[in-house]
Amino acid sequence: MKHLLENKLTLILVTLVIGGLIGWILKPSASESHEGHEHETESGAASLWTCSMHPQIKLGEPGDCPICGMDLIPVAQSSSGSDNPMVFEMTPEAVALAQIHTTKISGTNASGELYLTGKIQADERENAAITAKFPGRIEKLYVTFTGEQVKAGQRLATIYSPELLTAQRELLEAAKSKGNFPQLYSAAKEKLKLWKLTETQIAEIEQSGSVREQFDILSDQSGVVTQRNIAVGDYVNTGSVLFNVVNLNKLWVLLDAYESDLPLLSTGNEFSFTVAGMPEEGFKARISFIDPLLNANTRAASIRAEITNAGGKLKPEMFVKAKIQTAKKPSSAGVTIPRTALLWSGKRSVVYVKVPNSETPGFEMREVTLGNRMGENYLIESGLQAGEEIVTNGVFAIDAASQLSGQFSMMKRPETKSIEVSEEFRNQITAVADAYFQVKNGLVKDNFPDAQKSLALIDQSLSKVNMSLVKDQAHDKWMEILKGIKDSRSKMGSAKEIEEARKHFSMLSFHILEMTETFGINKEVVYKDYCPMAFGDQGAYWLSEQKDITNPYFGAAMLNCGEVKQTYLKGQPVMNLSETPSAPVGHKH
Image (tube, rainbow, N blue to C red):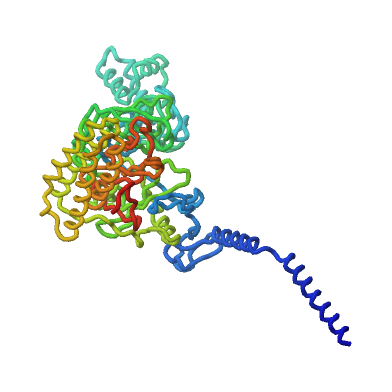
């Protein structure tokens, strides 16, 4: 009996083991379940829609917000492909759904290039109004729609005039007795001439001895009919405008220039421009007239150029983007932007700048300092450059989507690392930066003696910095940066060969960058460049006064190795985008 029970127990245990093994084999793997879950989550997120005003609303399809009625926007718009945390990327579909429009801003950049916007207009001198020379009724129309091409002398309409019939009869009667009463005959002919009948037409009436009931209205010039004011059966009076005909072979380019732009412009200046309909094709013209009066609302003057419209490519009312190379550089690189481009939060507000040459549409949040309002535009004191492309419609949708995705937005801006200092102090440290640029350029040219000789300029500029101009936190920070600049400058001056000097130059660059980011310098724009291959692929940064990469760590061997990591604009605060900034090789901060 005992042996039988042991056999049954063994059989049950074996059965349980085999069943568990089969169940484990048939069970889906954890990774498969997890992948399926992730796929479901991503798919769900891709089809989730929310309201920019009420982010608590999340629906599975596009439509209107049930609270405010605004169009819903996709939640999962950002691809997070950019390494700049201030850039928010969107799919082309999301850009279209949010109705985002961008505009290249006007103004003058640091190199003296002036960007203006405007439009094409018909030349006012080529606009002919075809008027009724005598009263009458329109019997026939040969031009029935606007936009029709006509030639000079072409029939536009036929008119019946009782008054003209009477005048013809008077001429025929006067012609019978012109020998006795020449004054009456001359008066009858003059009356017809005043109604713009030609000598040929008057002679035909005399020769035929009968009156003409209908006369043709002819076009005074070749062009396009832009306005038709009559229909068959209408009665018109002398002087009534029947048609407007415009010659589009000659056009005007009208640009808007603000007060600060006017000193840079003069008649005869050549400029290039593009139109929205043909962005890849360039045109050239010369300024022929500058309006002596400013528009009271926009504070802008009209700049006019004349252009021959070969092939009829250009059309009136086309929008124009123009670039003018001015003879002199402006004292400040002021630009203006439309009010719709701003997310207003006081003097320091936010705009979104389109990232150029990016595969995925990206928009960089940029803090700007506002100047005076001019009509529907704002003057920008700092934060933007002329020629940059900014979002002018849909800016709130971008900001709301960025906030919902957890990125920086107007309501969630990073802390600034800039410290306000006086203009005098900033001018003094700008001289330090200028001396640094000479050292950098010596290394770019592989000229070790010149680079070391330029170190003396750093000493001279540092000796002129008045430390009493900075107080408290600014003073402490400057003393820290000053110590680092002097230390790295000393080590670079003691270097025996160029490679050793370059190693210490990376330390000098670190402190110059700290100086620039903390206090700012009075340069319209400077660039933070990065070479990933410097010092055995450890990488190194430097500050540059020019946009093109010229590498001081390799010189001619790899002159263009590197990329622009950040752009510093005059007067723009620098955001603290990382808690621990990268220190250069061999430097302990």
